[in-house]
Structures are given as C-alpha cells and as structure tokens.
Length: 522
Image (cartoon, rainbow, N blue to C red; front, top):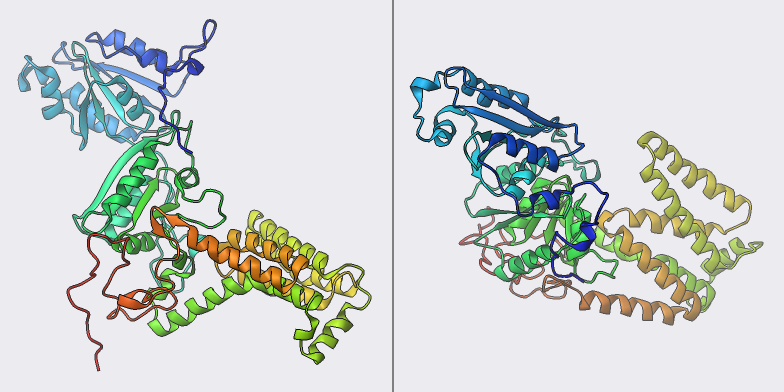
C-alpha cells in the first residue's frame, strides 16, 4: 500500500528546456553564500513570479559593516514582530559602541534582535520551508548562514464548540486549523511532562506539519513505532486534511468500519491519551486522529463521563441498540413479510396485508427506494445552509412521506420502517457509513434468501468485525469479556471508583489508573 519515499529530484519533476526554474533545481547543490546580493538573487529565483515575497534591506546608521536584509512572505507574518524586534533594534542602536565587530552575526543574534524564538540555520531546504510556514529569514553580509525568526501572524479561527459534537454538559472548546493552538488545548488538559510531542512534515509540495502526541509512560512503544513507520512511508503531493492521513495509514482499507478515531474535542483526545492512545494532529485540520480505535468507541461520547454513571450507561445502551437496530430492522421486516409470514402474529399480518393492497411495487423495491431517498435527503440537509437544510428535512420527512402513502406508491409500514431506521442511524454519527453499507447488504440478502440470508449476512458482519485489527489491537477488544475489569467501559460506563484499570494491549506500559480505587462513600 505504501511505497518507499522517492527522491524529490526525479525525472518527472525535471522536464527539460523551455520551462520555469523549479524549487528543487535551485535548492539542489546550492547553499547560502557569504555575499548578501548572491543570497537575495537566489531567493528571488526560488520564489520567482511570487509577488508575496518581501525582501527588506537595511543597515545600522552607526556601523556601516552591518548590512543585512530580511526575507518573508506577505500575509504570513506579524509585522509588529518584524518592525519592533528586528528592524528597529538593528537600525537605531549604536552598534559601533555596544557590540564587538569580530563576530557580528553572533552579536546581533544574542544582543540586538529581540525575538523570543531565533534559530540559526544553514540548510537551504529547511530555510525555504520555514519561510513558507510564516517565519522570517535574517541574512547578514559576510556570513553564509541565516537566522530563522518566528514571526507567524496569519489569521486563525477562534476556539469554539464544534457544531458536530455539541454537548449539554462539558467543555465548550474545539480544535481549530492551527496545530500549535490544538497542542495548547491538549496541554491545558494534561499538565504533565510525560506528554510528548513529535513533529514531522508530510507532502512533497505542501510540507504539511504533522504532530504526534502521546503519554510516554502509558502508550505502547510498538504502536508508536508502527504509527511512525506508516507516517514516514506516505509519499504524496499534498496533505490538506487529516482525512488524507487517515485513509493512507488505516488498517482494513476496504472496510467501511472506522479503524482510526477522529474528533474535534480536546477533552476527548485528552481522555484517549490517558488511556494509552496516540493522537495525530494535522496542521490545517480541526479533526484530530487517535489510534488505535476499537468498536466500543463508536458508542461512547464524552458526556457519558460527565453525567451520573447510571444515566451514562443507559444512554450508551440506547446508542448500541440503535446501531444494531438501524442495520437489521429493514432487512428483518422484508424477510418476515416476504418469506416467513407464518412468524408474524395474525392481527399484525392482516394489517400489513391491508396496507399492501393496491401497491404496484414489491416490498424490496419500496424499501430500497425509500431508504435511498432518506439518505439523499440526509446528505442534502447536511450540505445546504442550516436554515435551508432544516426546511429540506421537514419537506422530505412530512410532505414526501405522506404523499407517497396517499398515492399508494409504498405502504405505510415501509415508511415507518424507513423513518425508524434512518433516525436510529443518526444516533451514532461515527457509524453512519458502516450502517448504510451493512443495511443495504442485509436487505439484498434478505430479499433473496429470507431469514436465512439475514442470518448469513449478520454472521458475515460479526466475522468481519472479529477479523479487523487497529494497529495490532483487536477491533472487538473487551466486548466479549468481563474478566479482570474488561468491559467496565464498553457496554456500560462503570463508576469511576471501579475503573482503575486502563484497556489492556493499548496501555501496555501502565495498566493501573491509580494506586487504589476510591471506595464509594456511604
């Protein structure tokens, strides 16, 4: 699935005559020169035809030997940092009396420039990447190295509650598109030096910054190494969203089931990190990935842990039941009505038969079309503006449903089954895709073999679940076992004083949450 990372200077990137000079061609084999003019010309070639490139020459009015310039991209930097911390100190200070002329570069770096984050660099490729990321390059005539000064200042979306994961009780913070802001939101939740942060860049052209977060004393080393290996093997032009990463590193790539977690909430990521999972933050995306991801997480929400454990367990059971019923209700109804009418109570069978009178289409076709229409309305309501989307849903649910029944195109039980299955599907947002796929699969098998097709399809789904792993962790972890605290946070949410053990395999280093569980107060 993943190929070896290729050399950037390939034949595909180096077409011959009559073409513009490319970034790789300029950078390859070149380095910074001691002459300021040569360095400026080189950066003009690298950023040729880019009108956002800004080159500002200046020198100290007391010491003519200080001839320098700064290079940055417009709209990516904070001008106050440039003016107050770089240009003004170097331009106005009496450097002839204050610094030594024997090594002007170090003197300016440590005594004059007032920025909080300065790094000396000589590698041209790294320097260009820093400029593209919003940093400023400082060059001094007579020196073949530069200073990278942190000056990022682009517009960022404010921290707000994610609309797709709203809660009644709990934090109202959500991730943004800035990787550093997202890291700060996680650090505010986990103030511990064991929280480790690793960076890497992925994407030949976008050089997207990727951040790996994990608890060093809890997370499994084998899972961490496997994640890093998969990330390093990615060879792609660009990464725009975390969905690119998710699809490229996931297990069971042809399965509709999610094997990598995704959330916009810092509290959810913090809780998963404390259980031994590893988070992947992608710059430019508010969705943070977590690995490994198991089936039990699809019915868990953060509010389960903020409310009373009894109420949280009740809601979790409802969500679990809803996911199963959303898949099986249409196919089970079809199998009973079409092939196994003797299993239906007589009064109910007579009611179904009366509603079917005058309907020109078979039950299978009616169910298939109605479920398809429901999914079309769901997708339309999602893509349209919120006010228009609500109107579409109302028209689809009320007007269209009533119209097809009155026109005798489908029976009333088919509309009821479709609406019930659709509502149950929306209770588990993470499982919408898998539920739709499995529902239509069971519907087709039930239309051919009746209840036997339904059972056969259901067994196939269970076997598929049992065969999946997420970074080496069984997908159905703890679902079928209650020994040694397994299952304490799966079907139900046990009280906190019982949940003293982290999930096995995932938290390989440290299974115990605390030294001893707190006894319930009487």
